[in-house]
Length: 88
Image: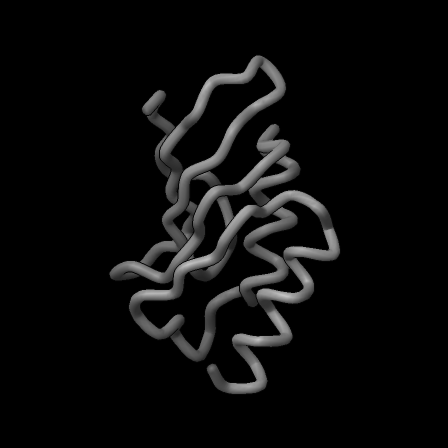
């Protein structure tokens, strides 16, 4: 694991909101960082993230909200705006 991914994974663990992080594709050069994507997901109501990775033009992930339900989500890679949420 390279230093940038290790640092990102550690940052997520320190936030106490992720049980694991999987990275698939490489984020675009003009994308928000993984740390910013995690913060955007938290702002959207996710209390625990099970995964978050770069897919196509989005950060895609799965997480739990305060109601205990698990959701799949997509964040725009450049802005972090939630573009899709679906209960898992």
